[in-house]
Length: 120
Image 1 (cartoon, rainbow, N blue to C red):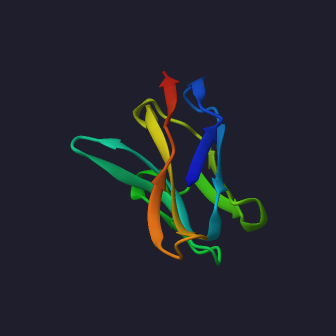
Image 2 (cartoon, rainbow, N blue to C red):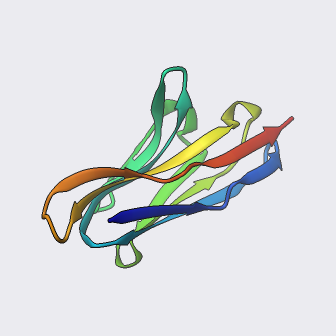
């Protein structure tokens, strides 16, 4: 019903930048919160999220380095990652909270994950 497709991952040296993008498509009525998560032991942890009105929330470990933004017309969320550190190495997952057009029900959707590798 709804698909999230991520792009922009890769390998970089410490101190460099990357920009992730994620597009939501399908039978979408409304996209509410969108965001990025990464894998932690036993769970996915929040990296950054943004509401449909543009209110952003960041994990402490990325504040001042990462910026989340979205284009509501394109159902797309971005993550600008600056001053990358080796400890940022991880798989990053896109998330979207979507109200599906046909059912009018809310559900959480995830992308397939994109690998970020930062070398020192």
